[in-house]
Length: 125
Image (cartoon, rainbow, N blue to C red):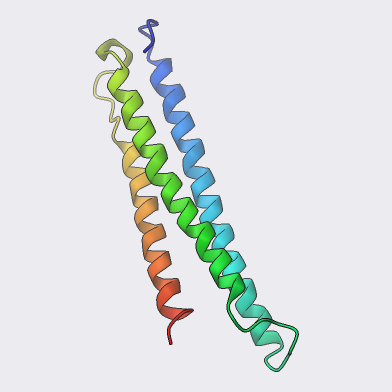
């Protein structure tokens, strides 16, 4: 892909992946916060007729968490595809190129566990 023979190309791609990682984490945290805020409102006013009882905030929060998990997977795939285009000169010796991918995949696994937790606790009948 590049003819620079410079390891900074790899580091730039890694920074981009870690920026995606932060975005995924922020989306997941925002989704969890939305879901918990809806729960907080229901606890605050248990007999209120103004609040919907069909867990709208839980569905919106779940959508954000799912989006964060999907973006973790897609950004890891994109980074892996980019790594395959690099020459060996562009990758420093004994550099662990799989660590950012591992980091994203662990975050995706956490999102799956968070989705399962929400489905079990919020949407349990």
